[in-house]
Length: 187
Image (cartoon, rainbow, N blue to C red; front, side, top):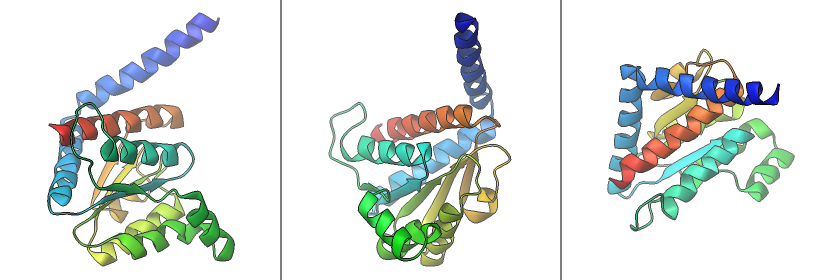
């Protein structure tokens, strides 16, 4: 029983990644995202990111790979996540959670930066508000999502939608997307 479950999970994950690899439009979007980030960093810009729950962890993972290193020895890349617990909980307690990332976007983002929001559903109100604030500032916006894309395709400049309904499969694809972007930024 347990071995069957393990195999089913592994096969579902690998099947999704094989479908993504065969989707030329999605592959092209990942390339475009890495190029936008690379261009922003080359001009002294910063990659900012945020998410909720597991997506918050993915946001932190992305920035630590860029600031520290992914695979190669190189100077650090300007990247910062909006997941600082003190900042998020201060704003959320004093005002409301839906505005916690928006406030940070308004504080830090400029037209030479990129903001990447992560939400498996594409419906996270705090990410959508952050996209709106970033776009108003002229900051390029990238969204990682899944399912039907939610509101992300209209809310950000580049929406990358995982073609899956299961949250865990979407999250597995997002971490793979992060590793792909890191690889492309380091080459």
